[in-house]
Length: 78
Image (cartoon, rainbow, N blue to C red; front, side, top):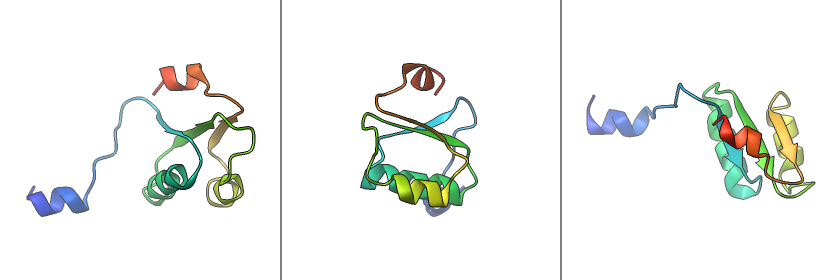
């Protein structure tokens, strides 16, 4: 694989679960990236109603969502 191809074709981890921690602008950017690649993922945020929740629900309603604190069991499985 050429260096250019490596940049254009990012590798998604196959082991463990992908968890997005925090659902602000950056977290939602990660959600869009993962969704576009068909990845399964979970989202956790310390806030009960993170600012990008409506966007998450519209883009990835199937995502495992845990809010109001960081879920340690979710992070342990990542």
